[in-house]
Amino acid sequence: MMGALGQSFINGITIGSSYALVAVGFTLIFGVLRVVYLSHAAVLAACAYIGYGVIEVTNSAVAAIVVATLAGAVLGVVIERIAIRPVRGQNHLIPMVTSISVAIIIEETLRLTVLSGQPISYPDTFASTVIRLHVGGAEPYFTVGQVLIFALTLALVLTLRVVVQRTWVGRAMRAVADSEDVSSLLGVRVNVTSARTMALASMLAGAAGVLLALSIGAIDAHFAEPLQFKALAIVLFAGLGSIPGAVVGGYLLGFVEAFAAGYLDTSYRDLFAYVLMIAILMMRPQGLFGRRLTQRV
Image (cartoon, rainbow, N blue to C red):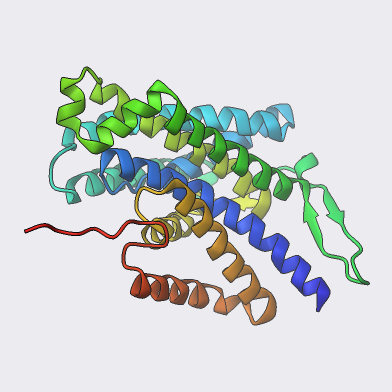
């Protein structure tokens, strides 16, 4: 019993960290740009492939994470320029469609050009090293990669929080989130702020791509799609625009899935996760950390 508890806790931290990284990116994009953005999974997958190439050359997981994070930023800027900026301010369905279109192009390009779409096994690095604990006669285990996921998730989220709250870049983002027209009149470069927002969110996706690939061991062009939609659901039940809410929601969902799989069966994992989401939204339609909106008449 103690072994199952410890192992479920470790798995919950790993799953929750992955969810939190992607959900925070969604929260940042929606909170600033007010668009439903669905290219996150494609950016995550592309950066996982880039990380694979870096590991093949350098045999360094750290180098792979750094390069993939930077690549994510570049991809985010490109996607913002071709899929978000031209349609910003229009019906919210339009940027959703354009971002889905870009995602399909990226994923199909990966599928058709890399090993004819066959899954890729991530190379073994020091991140694959298994560490076993001896607790009360049980032996829960984790890998160095899982420790990296947790540590880097906290570091990246805290850094993002500081950027948003304490820097002039963050002030510009908050101004654009309040009103694009007013912020433009005050001298804020809205297009530049939009690109920076996408770059920051996509950096998180780039890091998550390599970290998740190190954890699961194999990837393909579409491996991140389930993660994307769960992260989007986390943003909804945690509270739109709340970075702390996205983090707490990610870990909450991760623990629910891990304990459901550990004590029942893996087939119950998604059932319990989505039941939790529905229950939270029924009790708090504004989300765990969202503010109740009132309409004045």
